[in-house]
Length: 203
Picture (tube, rainbow, N blue to C red):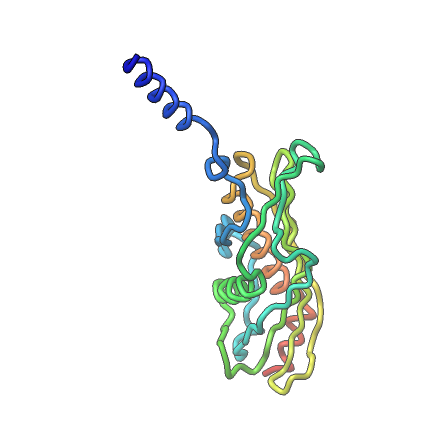
């Protein structure tokens, strides 16, 4: 009898170890954002940074205009009614402000935290990935370039559609898509002639 009870307990422990739990299921709710760009500035179309030679650019805190600011993606491989959401606990506006400033620096733009002669403001219009068989994301910003005195020198919008392949419902694939999309939207800004021409008024 004792042997039977012992074997039963061993079997129960083994089954519990194999049973899926909420954490092992790997839901992507309230995750922390990570920068996972696979694109590199050196591999993208060249940017003429001569317009920035005498500009010290301050990147102001971004404003998030998305309706659901925690939601950054969803998996709909099994249909919209069975969507698996991806949400973050981070402040997307603060995170993007820092990432965009870093990305501008990677392209050779002189970015400072204060004392600049121009300020770049950004409104977050889209920051989202939809996963079907692949990962497809859109990152879009509305920009404002202001002089040191606060006057608006230029307004415009840039966006980028980014894609990634990989295993289903994996955080790294969402991060890669969003990071590449962010870099693409910044790259598009730096190749916008009207923006570059407006910089001349900030010098």
